[in-house]
Length: 231
Image 1 (cartoon, rainbow, N blue to C red):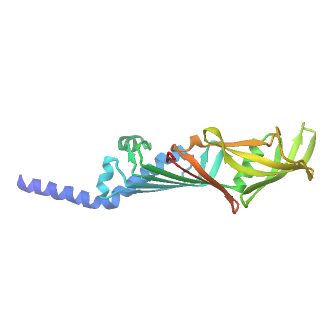
Image 2 (cartoon, rainbow, N blue to C red):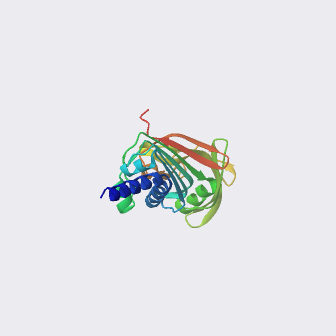
Image 3 (cartoon, helix red, strand yellow):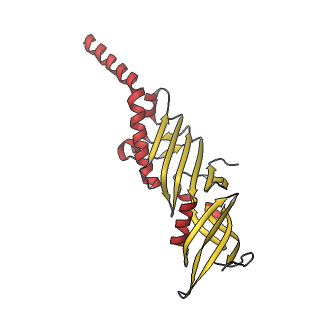
């Protein structure tokens, strides 16, 4: 009997000792699969951190780092989506049983999302009525768009407009036009035009509740930084 108990004790120790190798990989894979359903992409890598690793089974983590490529949120595809969860508590029953990522609590969330100028052009061509062949250039804190507009299904005219990406009420991202020109003639500042404000994406559809802190428009990319801080 004592021999069996000793063997069982050694087996438990061996499992605990080896958990530092296999358990993080298992959890990383489960979180990645769970995040796939929230981000609309399978291109996800996860690094869950906790010492000792066996403590992950209780759902408490020091940090969970998530990176996704080509994440589809609302109607926009983010080329890169990075999420850092500090001190999260994850529902392990839902994770192991249903492969769902349910956060019971979290100390800090930091999120960075990137939209390329090519993706914005695709969105404008597909989502803005009458616009076609739109090309986008993002640089120096501005977004510049050139393309064509079909008027009443009869005439096609060249259009160019530029402005900024801003966050409006209820965390809705939008393109705000500052000036535009038609057929290369400056039309001045826009008021009441179709292009005054173009809705892009509802950021409340991101996987976690965060508030946008900054939006930068440089080097062909729109970079959105958000977190869960109250201030």
